[in-house]
Length: 233
Image (tube, rainbow, N blue to C red):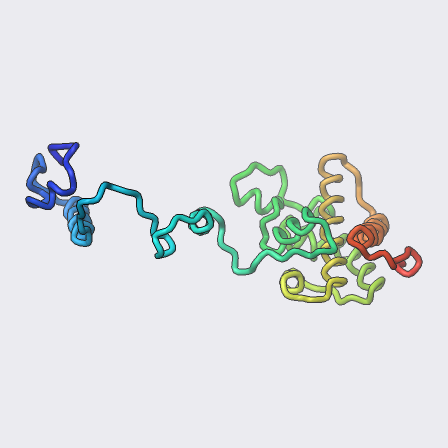
């Protein structure tokens, strides 16, 4: 609508804002946009200084990379009610996996179907009875229940629902409980992938043995030098 595309802001202050428009403001969104422009110009005070950039994300007028990063994170990153928790006794990729599981962000068949990904079947590949969502795959599936029974009997742990397990992962200070919980999740996911891509039927005794060995190796690799296989078993 502006007739002079190179007009300066100072020139718009000398006459009305609409003085150099090619036509009058019409209905629709234009009156609202004009009101926003007028309100914006009302707060502008011109000086005789040269034009300059002014950064005011943090209120002190100074540019800071951290402020820009925080702004971009707030705009683009998904919001979660719980912070990411890192367990030092387990590898980083396992931490990420457990965090995704507790937030229900794993690519289970149900989650893939929700995103309109073509899936041949929604049934759990381990038991072929229930739909494969996170709650079923890691807690309700017969294979998951049997493995959890073996782990619970080994370390005298309490079996938990998905909601209890998520609370335990994010809040509990008992590193042992969290480590065995996450180790079981990871092994079930690994066996599920072997079944899907290599057609290898998982055995619960093998899964349990892997959990025992993996959790022992995690602890030894993280500096628990006093451990030995006999005491671990």
